[in-house]
Length: 251
Length: 219
Image 1 (spheres, rainbow over the protein chains, first blue to last red):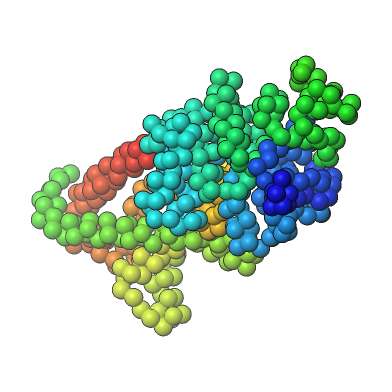
Image 2 (image 1 turned 120 degrees about the vertical axis):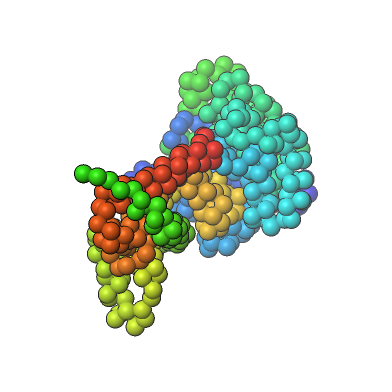
């Protein structure tokens, strides 16, 4: 491993977040290295999504710090915009812009944020739609796409900013079972291409096959982390085993 | 009672001129009150207490005063207060714009509030600024969503332009009333006025319905 690879892209140190009296994150520390795929698993309300939302500044921290390439995340508006350009975010509910076609959705970032000429933005967007297998849906509006197609467009839209890190917040939780696979296979391909990814998911098979490391959350804290083989086959923490067995995971 | 419709035909030129002025007044008012309403809504949601308070104060003032009072006030007070006197048309336009802007402000505010939070977050996550998020993502959806409300405001406005006849703006109502008082053909002139307003208003309402079907967003 080279020296550059050893520097974490993202480093969390004692990250805390409160929603009123509710402790969403009770001091989370972890590191994400370049080209690593990290899956965050754990019960609902255990803080996985909150950690993602803190990572790109959609939620402000109440304590601790997050470093991107060694620098503490900025909190001023222009610093936050620059930081967000480097992170792609995919939401559980897709959040495609309903007034724009699939192509125009993917062009949104390059046009408005990067200020690319329209022709370049369109070429980039089209290439990404090809990549997610939706070139024939370029002119379709989100309302005319299935959930799985919408989520693939949303992934393309995030990739159009050419981010260093992709954050996936339960990307398949709102999908019909038959369209989950197409989204996961796009994500798997991204991982194989070396994209650095943090994925909050309940898809244990995906986590098992694709993750380099799995991090288990409970009550706003990390209770166990390790390679998938450890977490799924020989968890060291009893509550990890309990959580997995509740999901019907039998290895 | 004998009706004599010839008075309508004899004055058709004046009525046509009045109609043109009515349409012009309504269009000009809306052309000011749509940006005005968006501005009021943005100020209200700006996060600055002073700007939000100013917007709320403006809105509550002009929404809760009778329009005819605003029109009279614009006519009598504006020249004294500002030291300038505008033509009756511009005075009427100012009064109508103040009133309709206040209504539109509330309409846009409700429309913006109805766009779910995740849409704004998706735009911010792409690296857009708050203003870009508003301009590119939230407002276009909000405007489409409030089109039916804007349409009914427009239909009301089209009829409410008749109120500026009290300051002698020569629009349709003023013209018809003037002809009535000169000819004493009350029923004929009221009927003609009703027919013109209705015939103009009805297709507009239908046009807006069509626009709404054509450009409304499905989610």
